[in-house]
Length: 124
Image (cartoon, rainbow, N blue to C red):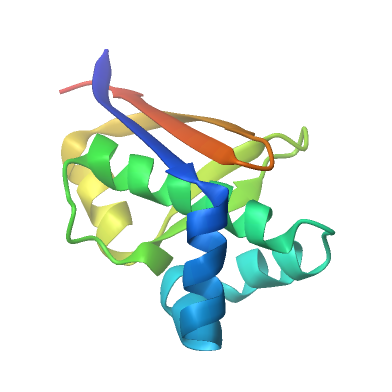
């Protein structure tokens, strides 16, 4: 049974401008160290962070908890190498309360736009 769906679309240049304007403070507020390290090693670091932000926003919507801290959601790599969404802290508690048993994350991006989609499945 689908418990929640979240989608976020954003403009990469606009997100990149926010990263320039607010610098490390914004990165630290939104992203875990692992996410920051992953992006730092890529040619399109801002694009990588933008799509991760889209995934986190979609995750908050799917959980129905917009107050969940950004760092309580983390884009990680599954064993297969595909992106996955991990829950920590308040996000993990919310997922447990909802009865989430599986999380599907889909990411896509180009130089101008990115999109994150999260589907939560489980039993109520």
